[in-house]
Length: 447
Image (cartoon, rainbow, N blue to C red; front, side, top):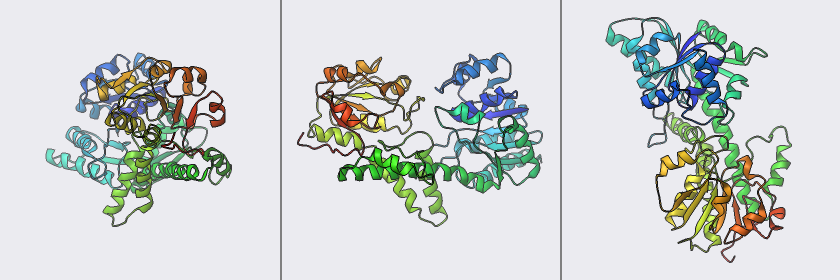
């Protein structure tokens, strides 16, 4: 099949590469000419395990190509996927200007039947707006051409996106046209052959399904962080509690790991976005409001622990930071807890020596050159001259460090672990003080 992807960011590029891998002819459209030139050379602008290799393979096979021409894109594919960003607006709602701009472009160039597939993360009712925008552009041209608008939300985990797409646990399609549903079923058939995983529903239910799924996962995280903060005050160990409740199949082990808050491109947009949509419909979503509030507060936990330990005297101190991306196996730093910590340390007069396996260039892009930020080549270099170590991202290479080397390198023998990577009793055997999230020991200003 022939399909067009508008947007070559995280969702668009993964979607295009995977559809090409299944033998389709894919054309990706993006307004960023520099990004398009990179992609034509087979260079991925984002880090996702396996993506660049898949991209190069399908470029060589002629199954994927890239352009800045919206007209070329509309003429190319029966399926017109919209996979552009929907950044949060000032009031927390999703900004649909990029989605609607693509819809207008499709209407301006449409010359035959097309299926417009919205894969961007959007609030309920967006499909109606897309349909209206395409219709307005057609009316301005004085033509009447049939088209359908479909909701097809993505459920990709950064760091495992290719597997999620190639072997999905479900494919949600929102449409009111049975013929369109069958065309989407045929498109996704290579990924669902072993078991029919396509769930067809009305458009608004499909749009809400995306928001509801992410909001549920974010709720589990914030709830566990609430329990962790409570466990710390009670002298309990949240990791033991986690294993105790996770063994209940009604709860399960997924997304019940406490930490220093969630980030990324979905949860921080979806939770306030759904709250805002609820208010538009005259309903106050109190649980969602609490989820967002808890997460903002949790992102400050590591800094609060560090500040209390040093009795608020951080001026001139240097803190080593391990992990900058919001989660492992990605270079995405959108809403990352590391940013909250680093910026709070700077405000308090401290310096930062930071290391991340893949997010160093993104950190440089965000913050530029600063005297109070040193981006180093490895985790050991981050410790050099540091007063303490803070762990923010649970990269695999941080899980079994040389604790003797950490103890020798740090001016103060203390670790602040925002991801609960280690056993407290084991770490303390090396003469290190260890403060994690909800593991029974609170930081006292009397240290």
